[in-house]
Length: 209
Image (cartoon, rainbow, N blue to C red; front, side, top):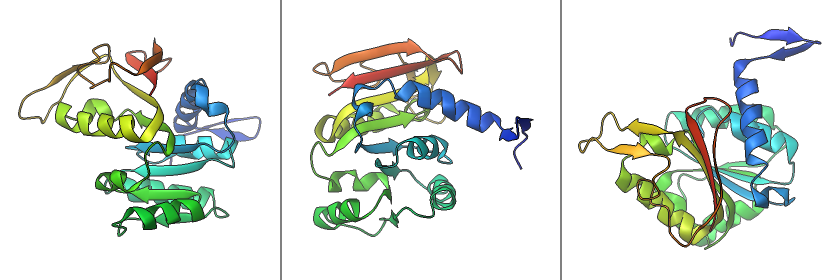
């Protein structure tokens, strides 16, 4: 059970505070004002950010791209939070037509990373990676950014200001201020790069593709 304090009858946890701070940040993405956004989040963890976004934007469609065991944790969380929504585990889908049908007929999809190519080009309004890209080697980051370039209209992610990849054979070092480290396409338009409220050594970045 998460530790909490009760404020005016509401149980407040650190998880809720952090996700609300992140929600405050993502609402400044220009596309966020659309009522029918399709958002894809890579590395969604336990699904906290997805939950707060969907609680406040009922018509959004949401895709979570992750790996076990995290993807099953976020699935259980969102299934409990949104019993009225149509949720689909798409792990067995192998072609674009079936994947697009699932997107049309459901509110929330769960996919594995290799299935990103099974969506139509420029289908995502916002491609998000919260606290995950800095855990990857540069080759993996580039694969995701190539997908952003072909499939999304906006990119939002946050990362440590500087980090080393602990288990990478090449011992890669990443700087959030280095576009080459994160394979940022030179044709993308920078919307903002700013320090996060919390953690204070995180940087938030947004680009229009």
